[in-house]
Image 1 (tube, helix red, strand yellow):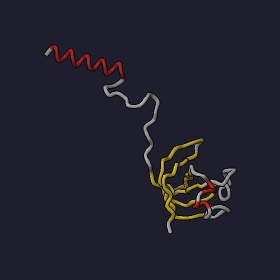
Image 2 (spheres, rainbow, N blue to C red):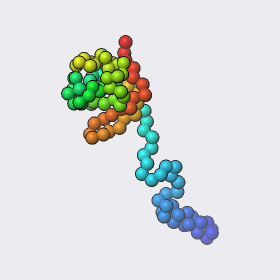
Image 3 (cartoon, rainbow, N blue to C red):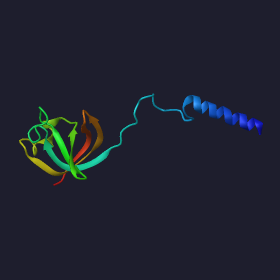
Image 4 (tube, helix red, strand yellow):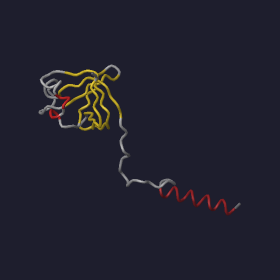
Length: 119
């Protein structure tokens, strides 16, 4: 009984010293991999339609609750085939983008792994 209490105390002290019992798989400060999400909305040009970027970029506008959130696509901009429908101020509705979302300078960016345009 005393031996079991000593072992339990040693484990508790070890956990307290190391900050937990589990050993981290990643180096300290490294974030876990981001999960892919699907967002659907209206694709527009960040330069021609929104006047927010110097170069033509693809921006997916998604209605979330009572406001529109812009997701700036991390892609090749006006070189993407789907940019033709938005350059010059146009828009394409019903576009679903699958990818990982990050935030930079207060703006949401999405690294697209797939872009589906409703036909």
